[in-house]
View 1 (cartoon, rainbow, N blue to C red):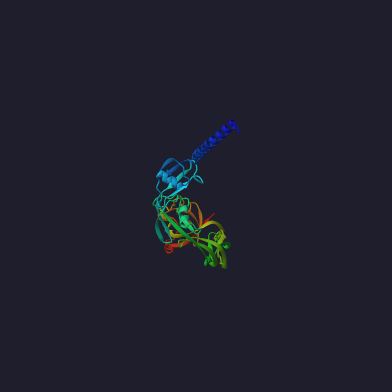
View 2 (tube, one colour; view 1 turned 90 degrees about the horizontal axis):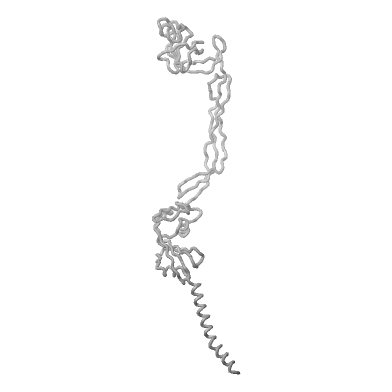
Length: 328
């Protein structure tokens, strides 16, 4: 082996360890560079940023001096701890839970009522949360867990009768006569009852079956609009039951004149113009066809004063209830 070859071999032996050292230093520096992370910590209404080599959130919090209580919780903004991950610390607060007749105060760091219910095992389908699952947990909040149940029941209830009106030409217009009183039937109703903590809150009918048919009430309605008078059949527009009295032709004025200026005589009656307009022809049962042509201070509402020319007859008439037909 020549002199030059020996020099080359010696140079290689000296250079190789140096290269290895440089590689190790580069690897360590590169690993440190990639392992170091910037992490954001949101806690107690403030945010801090730290650089860390830790890969566990608990270690990062210890490095930042953040102490967690037994019920405090934290959440990561990413699946695992990486650069720019945000660690959000949620402090536990007291809330009151009412469930199945018991009330308990618990400490929780859950963010919503639904999360708290799930952690306590009270998020079943037959339970209702008040406030709702989406409500944000607040300090000293009162949460009610209501147990929902339902039951299917059957009951017998009345099936109300209907009312049937039938025209009857033998009855006067405006007159009604009940010919069948009507009678309720029965029906079986199947309902779904819903309860909240044992108290009924709703009832939804499922089915109804009539077990006994009701009997309708039948009412005959008069359609006849004529009345027999001394002048023959006369058509009327309506019928009024009125309190009647009698007066002499000279009771209103010494001259025997009515409010309309015509002479008072048999066949002239005094009325309340708001009930029967003056000038209207009427038929008074037991008196005859008459003309509403006079008024009187005491003749108000459904009252009528019949002019009777004979004093004794007027006294005998007195006061009585009469049927008054308002003629067309």
